[in-house]
Image (cartoon, rainbow over all chains, first blue to last red):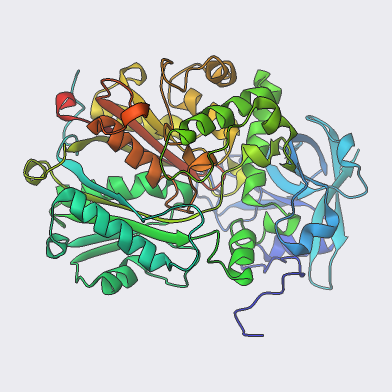
Length: 140
Length: 396
């Protein structure tokens, strides 16, 4: 296999960067961390070096409540490649967190038919390997 | 008609040549560069120009090739040495963005005669690795793709929320597919020419809710090319010049979770900018080419482009307003849903259809008296939006 070939059966995993390492460290510890700007009050997901609103570097990292609502969702029947084929049908959810920011995730231990708009969900994590735990949600 | 605020590119450049590969749809055995060259040859003949007159090439990434600089690779393949070259990558919005850039480059004095060109083989030319890469690398690797979110899913979530907020139905979406299939049946060379019904769309295989197979764009092989020149030079070309009257773009986010409002897109801003530059309003348009990666995309766009109020796109289209005799005949060639979808340059066929309509070349599918045309392209889960206003000499 050439170095440019990718394993079609392996799910894509994130490679944390200098901005995002603390966020992924948090996921590994089971925490969803949000950045709160001490200058303008903006709350942001995902981690950046600056506040996305005012460019301040004065960001405080706080653990989110983990509560949110499904803002939108789509249940995937045709998987994007063989790696996800065994999971279908699965719901990709756009969750609006109690603190304001939205994030993309997917559900665990949930029948896709039980998901609707504004459904209450709670954050959890799923350990993939020693470095990476993925943020997931389950029904509240 | 009032003119836009100066300085602008309004009326300073024109499309004088359009061309497609000899065949679009399923075209095995012809490389992406050859498809692009066939299209460029056709556009050159249409413009009545010599190859040596082309001094600029603007292109985009061809997914079934490994070229990092398709415009440069194409120039070598076609045997020219341009003095301006660029590759624009703003996903589906690339179509409008490249035409807008061609006009800007000419207006700035960087180029005289610009070739905008692409060839791609999404249907028959992708190795399994390329296909997989295009699927898995189309969304962000940290915050989206680990959750198995194909780009289709981002569009699907916006449409789903539109249904929730405005009462839009899958039947409304299906009207887009059925209307455009009728248009494709009247268009020589279209990939899909079998009539479909609302029920066919509703009962086709589910892909990612609320979208089923017939709500989704095709996958195709093909090439498309344009030649754009100054208004002055355009007067000497054999075909009726189609002037670029307005251009606008908007890039609202990268990740779908940072889209400010998932049922309203950057098309609101890009179209407003383009209309202001052109000095026109939505009701002035005679014909439109509207990006249609999914049926619901068109429903949302007739709203954001100003043809109806927010939330009324479904009934607007179901009432026949995107076809002949309606408010804005759109995608009269069949669009990505039924004509062809060749990747980043897929909506070039929309722009070419608008040009043909404005030239009066469409025969049985001609929109009578078409003088002012709209071209709107978008991509990447509504991250990117580009609008181009086109018109005949009468609109100057």
